Length: 528
Image (cartoon, rainbow, N blue to C red; front, side, top):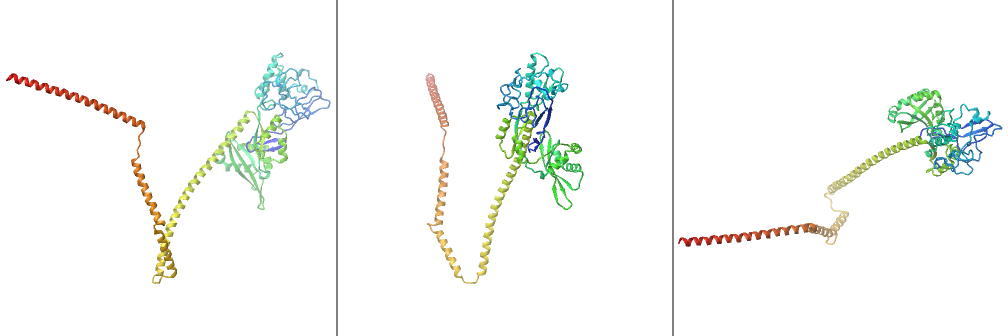
């Protein structure tokens, strides 16, 4: 965003819109009127960045300027709050502040007071008398908020309060007279309460770097695909000068299908040296009417510069609160600045500005998340490469060990062939004795080999006992054991009942057999 505060130009990196902050306006007041309201540098009536300077004609008592020691807020004393928006920006608490709340009327219409303005009783030489046919917008707003004369009865006070509410919200139309058109209340009006202060990055590029930002109404993919064509079109806009070369520094996506392109132009001299065109020079050329028309044809919506602020410019920017922003809020914003070295407070007006900054923040968050994902994938790839490298190192170590053994065997065989037929030398005899000594120490029962054999036997025994114990180990759950006992008891009861039934059946069979034998004997006696 390119902002201008009192003539100083800053270009925060976070945004691209370029509202004017610092447009100085001078108003000459006609003589012979009777009250004063406004401010010289507190921003009571100005938009964001409008420093209003008012010159009063000789002999006039009417002025839009308050005394130079006035440090009031946008909406005056908080004792007259109108509709209760005292928590918004501009709730003044500084002593000696009048604003619109007190001292200028007696009708008591809330936060703006009453002005006792009688447009029909203007003196011929007054400012409002000269512009009665076409009153100024500020006069229309003040009249609509304090003393409308639409209905001519007590309902005008209700209409004034309704107009105040609309002015607070920054929307709607304010009806105040039958002879004039209603005034439009926008969020830029000095009475709007929906104002806040955010932070933007301080630009760090110098004018010698030559960076100029172009805002294109195209998607990032389309711009990247047609980047070469864009460079050629810009070169044609610069007059197709062969000594100039257009370069693209970066391309960044913005909300609402817009794209930010940062360019710089390099000029090559006949002796072979080259230098960049300063940003202010390039920006001044692109801002010409005919050049802007050509840029519009290729889709460029706006061009801004991004140059760092000098310490004097930064001090001037932070010293005075922008028009329409309460100095207390501005001072608090400077205190709450999370990084004064890199961020500067920037006023925000209305919900659209807040939504735009929110969209830009979401866009930057997505870009950061994309970059984090790329870094994460790179880290994962590096971790895989590291694991592969570690495995290869281990493989090469084993291969080196095998090759070392093979080389040693080759050297042994070569040494044997070289020394064949020669007597054993003294050093070889000493070496053989040392090897025999080492071998005997290794084979000693109390030395390394014996201890190793003992450890091996203990390990075998532990493994054997562990296997035996693992085979003998078993456990039964208490509930399962209870169920098994109950099932066995039922089986036993069933077997007992079966045995008793069998016994009863055997007794019955014996009784039947006995009866049959008795009947047989009785029949035999009768026959005989």
